[in-house]
Image 1 (cartoon, rainbow, N blue to C red):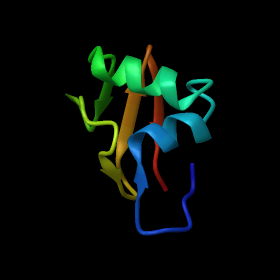
Image 2: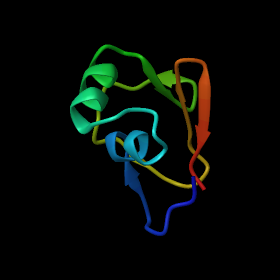
Image 3: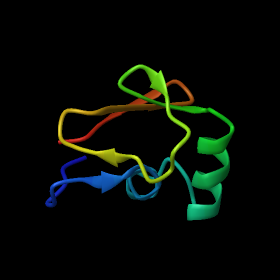
Length: 65
């Protein structure tokens, strides 16, 4: 997904790519360790993603552009 800002927060990114239905769902799956960023489990929903970061959830990969 292409972003028009310097960064996007992880929970907002998951909503934007339709990986989750709501911010509440994003909060839960992140807290449960189901999301990885650049190959490492990420537990912070406010993690700043920048172009080039790779997010993985449930066997799907999303690239921040």
